[in-house]
Image (cartoon, rainbow, N blue to C red; front, side, top):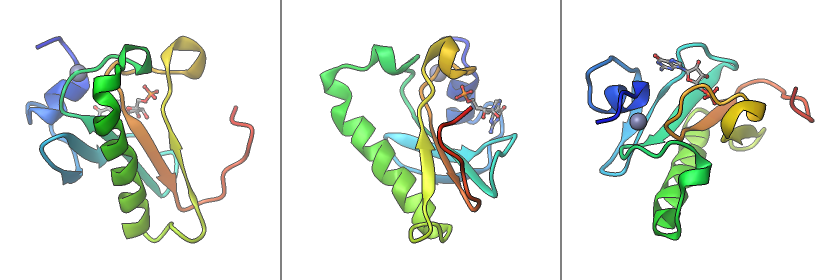
Length: 114
Ligand code: 5GP
Ligand code: ZN
């Protein structure tokens, strides 16, 4: 296993506040929430960034996005709205190099992002 924080959370070696999981993904609360709801949806398999995705991952990415929508709905954000974000590499502010889909909801969010 690569030395990766999110691989360790997926493996249960580091605790995470898990809100949902299945054979492909694990979703857990962000340790520094930027909104009342801030959940990270991550694949169990290590993928460093969006740049590393292949066509074989299309089903996995669909699972991540649908899981994000389900989590937002379960937290009551479907009608008012919520934001999903994949940060990729330095200019976008990616800090953990195991892809993760941020699910942010429960407050108004500005556009464009900072
Ligand atoms: P990025 O900036 O790479 O898109 O997002 C990484 C996210 O991981 C950040 O929002 C950060 O707060 C979160 N994070 C960093 N370390 C941990 C941790 O140990 N546990 C959890 N649950 N989230 C973390
Ligand atoms: Zn990883």
